[in-house]
Amino acid sequence: MAMAHPVRLDLPEVEVREQRLRATVSYNGTARDLSRRSKNFSLVNHERGFEQCSTCQQGCAGIAYNVRGAAVVEHSPIGCAQPASAAMGINVANAARGLPDQSVNVLSTNLSESDTVYGGAEKLRATVREAKRRFSPDAIFVLSSCAAGIIGEDIEAVTSELQDELGIPVIPVFCEGFRSKIWISGIDATFHGILRQIVKPARKKQPDLVNVFNFEGSDTFTPLLGKLDLRANYVISLADVETLSRMSEAACTAHICETLATYPAKALEQEFGVPEVRSPPPFGISWTDAWLREIARITDREELAEQVIESEHKRLEPLLETMRAQLAGRRVYIFAGDSYAHSISNMLLDLGLDLIGVNTFHHDQTTDGGLEEADSLGQLVASKGDIGNFSVCDKQPFQMVKVLKDLQPDILIVRHTNMAVIGAKLGIPTIQDGDVNISAGYDGLIKLGERLLTAWRTRRIFQNIARHHRHPYSEWWMAQNDPFLLSSEPVA
Ligand code: SF4
Image 1 (cartoon, helix red, strand yellow):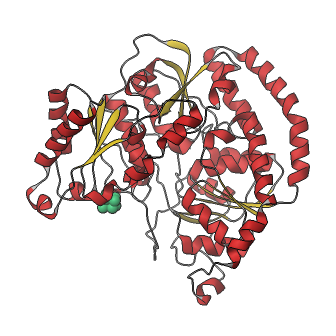
Image 2: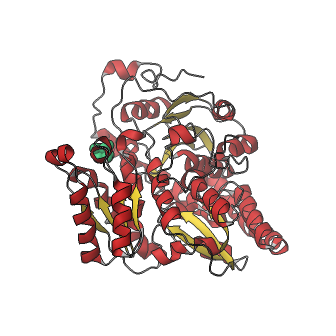
Image 3: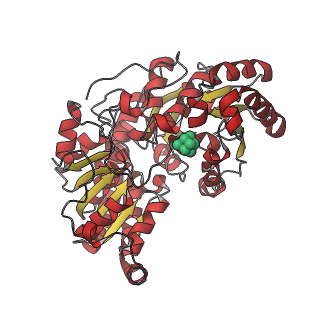
């Protein structure tokens, strides 16, 4: 891995992933080939010949909705604010984490046709002031949109003026849908704004605090890091603005997913001197060992870490042996985001399952920082060998239905709710791994094994659903040999 550009917090925008990480949304081949070709950036992000659907990066930028005590202004036509409805479920996550409820504070400027002719700056000023009046937030994020981008609205100037007027961070987030096909570019845009305008230089270092970049999952890391006498600082979902401002005080920055967090981890190291944990994420036995060892090295707890690892291995071994025997022979397929799909692959192979294929929604050919140790695909291939039927496809249902019909896995694991439906309609027992934190650490491996067993035992429900479902694709399409026929990336 190479091509590590410095983070530029002096600029209002971060480059999208197609440019920064040479990301692609189309590939079909093997894990080893994908890893090898990524090392010299030889994959090209072709336009698709045919696209059934797409997702806007504004949805991912909407991670700003999850910042406790903040407000979001969507500078867009009202339809672009749709992801706000998904954020309304945030208190389920708060309950799982043992935190009090929080409000999701969102307003839209509701740009109209005439605003796209005469400009929407006045509407933006009025809406940001209204957000301050209505919610008394600690920060306001202003999310851009295609309409605002196309007319060249000067959001940077308006937010800067309003920040002075209102006395709180007013943060522009540049996430116009047309700029990137990689929806997680929107998360980078929100992180960029937080790093520029919320994080402050450390007032007092906290040597036992570990930043853990995660989504809105359960509290797995308090007990795991507690074994090393360390505290987990969960960021950024569910954290408040004050907590985010103090990320610079932590001993180090870890994460659950390179796709999610190598950008803010690199920025915190470069700009605030907080070291990044250089290891794959803590999913599966050897990756959890490596993650703990690296945190222990940075926080000077190496001896304690070795004791913890030894005792956890002893505790786990008999449980794993039983689970492997129960799961033996089951053929599993994974359909998830880039790095997280690699993490689940690592766990399934630890559980002794037959991993018959993987599809990731996009693929970054490098990470921010270009670290070999955080390259989850490279680490997976190096430790577990090659994986066939390895593809990259941004949720195109016509392709995924065909892949699953052809491969006929016993169990499907997906990361997102809307993808779980595809498996169910095909009669494949499907696990939706939404709360990613549950699968982390040593106990996470056992919990994943238990969920796989439950899914397999309930297969008749899925078979029943499939009997009553007819998919809309033509016989011609379903008879094709290559599910990726209509993608322009050649088969490896
Ligand atoms: S920002 Fe653009 S792509 Fe995203 S929802 Fe709005 S119009 Fe659609």
